[in-house]
Length: 364
Ligand code: 13P
Ligand code: SF4
Image (tube, rainbow, N blue to C red; front, side, top):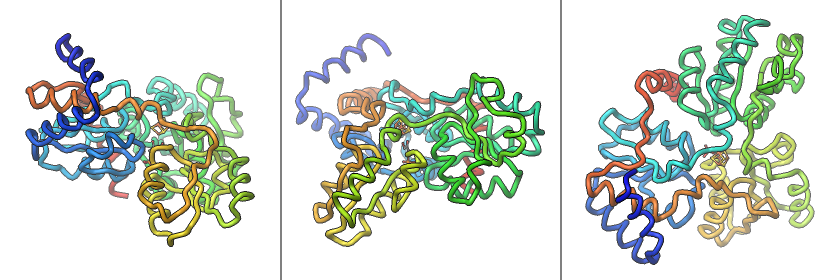
């Protein structure tokens, strides 16, 4: 970023909301069909209202792969989502993330050297290539998706994890699932895999803190990652709502702990949570365990339903929140001026391997 663009971003913080709105709309109009703005459901309202397309991770991956005619994909989400858009879009399209600091703390919990070391370590006890399918949650770096591409594995999202696990077990008897232990455990449990065959690998500990016997016996080896937002929801919160509102429906994201998910009425991705609430009759009561912006949006959209946030404290995705109207305006105005700022460009070889894993997922 050069000094001129940096100072123009700075100056946008002195604009009123109205001025920003006017400038964003003007830039969109100038860019026309050359621009598509994708927004994840956790995006703050001020930005979400400019979305051309919205979705959960799976829907956004599919949208990015549908080879829209737009030259520029401005992704209002987090880094791994923009990487997926870059990998799945056509080579002439350019993906931009309005603030490069919009990462995902869960995705940062597993990196390639750690996963390669774990693969090697497990390989001393079992024949990993013939016995283990690596599955990475889409909330991961492109290099981990590439690792899954190389080792006959795939990617999953919160809306297809069960289906992907079933596919994996049709290939090999074991799965290494990273980085989110909760999505892995909740999905494996739903398939009927006994808890003693779902084990937790803790990088940094010898054998991940497991015994050789536990590794040999395991069907699912989970990475010790988690989402700092979803770990805030606790079984006590569910109990409190059940006590206060006897007919309440508890709907949570599968990144919540098993203890919370076991008590819930419905589990689902952000898109699925919205479908559950939207399809319920007026008067229905819900307590929802996922990021606050999505829950507040549902509250405004459906005033004839009683919608509560499951946690008494605020659980927000602080990295998603970094994308604000100032960064969006700055990114779009730079595009109008012919400057590409904050481009997300996955290196070619890594992108090709990650694409193999992602396309495997989209085909399953
Ligand atoms: P979804 O795929 O359900 O949108 O989830 C993405 C995510 O990061 C949830 O924390
Ligand atoms: Fe990552 Fe959690 Fe934010 Fe989702 S809510 S993007 S998992 S930090």
